[in-house]
Image 1: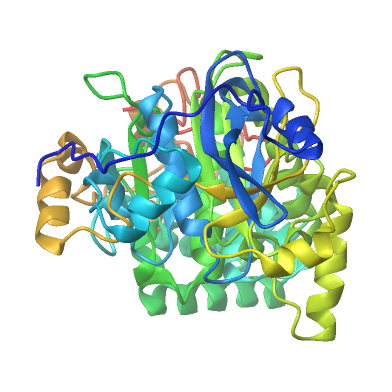
Image 2: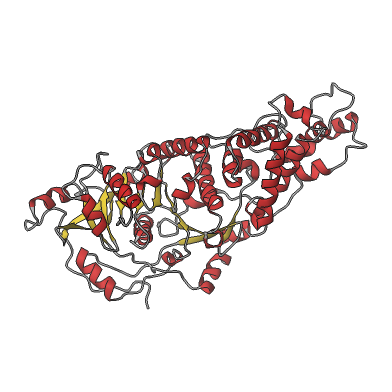
Length: 530
């Protein structure tokens, strides 16, 4: 099959809203989607059981950084909607990030396969369907799966996100924050789990406890809980997600040689049973982008659109600090040119403060089999603008690949609610073969940069080193910039952090021993640049 294989399609549509045969209500809806500038084509309007192909439903490209929600029951077509939007963003030069929960989004890199269903769908919505693959880069958390390994250092991950992963309560989260604060002020970069374990163990010991008293103290019981949580987490094989080389999220902003945006696919099937881990890691990626990217204001198109699949896992059992950080990050990252789409089953899965910032909505069918389902259905209807449809009836009757849509117009106002039959993706709707995927991963220039884990000397090794023979004179000789000692018997930590060897642990240009690491609203820290 050639790279561009065309299925016979229907006649090209007229300009949205121009067909005189459309009913008055449908014309009014279609007029709300007749944008003058660049836009993504979602599909055709559904009205009174008919697909009106001349009424095209679209999203203005500049509005994609106003965030969005793709929701619907299992099996209603959410994944294909992600694929459809990602393809068109890539074609217009916008990089995309996709979290591949089920392992079937790798097909975006390969041309789709024509068939009767695609031919019929294309004819219904006046789509000129052409089998097309899109530039893609594949990643895997810690290298667990098919993809370039994605790792973070403990220091950059921060206490708020790590507490979510370790399922710590609020008091334990605050105590972990004290440990990070201590390490930050001493210039101690925590590279992996054993570094953090070593610092917690030291600060809760008789020798190290005085070091922490000045910033609030750490109880032995809380330190024990944190240490046990770290040990259990590592025993489950999760330690490989933390370490070096740390992933640079600027890799997600790439375009290929013909100007199309690269689709970054993070494979997650291998960690499906660790929802706190992968959902929180996704938030770290987003927070790291927020931390690094400059302000750009409103632009003609986003720098990146980030799809956050299984979003309910992110908010589940989240602490107030965590929820507040999510809300602020989503609100502020828009001005940095990044659009975020949350993907989940119902809008109620997303906290109200976050939901209120999602200007673009694609709601697939909902089921109402139980009283809780009916309650969720009514709550979903209330989140939409006034509509000419009976939304409670409509949302339970939509077919696969159909959705209720409202987006922000070019002027930033909500468009009329539109029941829509969505277009078919042009790439492969399913995974590519393992051999092809492995070839794509190992031939990537990023593979050589990130594949091999590095375990350099860091906090763990330095805290294990006995202090004997390392008096003040020797420490000053090894670190001429260190402050002069005012006590005859410096503690182990003072000897360690006073050493010139800790210069290599500086987190950013200009960071020196004793200067605190700067953290974002999410508690994440700036990457140590290579």
